[in-house]
Image (cartoon, rainbow, N blue to C red; front, side, top):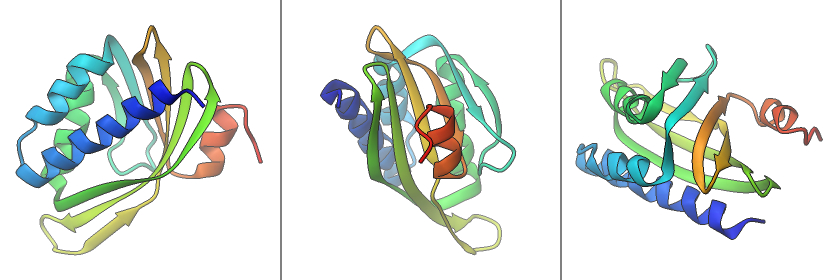
Length: 141
C-alpha cells in the first residue's frame, strides 16, 4: 500500500474533523491547498449525501462546507483504506451528525475513491456503497 497516499488521506480526515469541531473551514481549506490539484474534480452521485460535481479546490472546500450547512455536531472516521495501485486509494468512511433543521441523527457509510497525480488528488469520487466503489476501481469482490 502506498503509505504516502494513506498518510495524505489520514491528514485529510484530521483536517475535516477539526473543521467540523471548530466550525472553521480553515483546516480543511489548508489541507486542500496543499494536497489537491488546482483542477481537482469531485463527483458525488444523487444517492450521496451531498450530490453533484464540484470543480477545483474551491469545489472541494465547498463540498465540506455544504455538509456543515446541513448537519451539526459532525464527525468522521476512516473504517478502511484499500490500496488500488500507486495512484488510487479507496477510503471507506463513516460520518454523521444531526440534521440542522430536524435534529434527526444521521450516519452514513460511503466509500471514496481518490486518484492522485504527482502526489496530489486530481479526482475524487464518492460512492454510496462499497461494492460500487470497488467496481469503479476495478476491484470487484
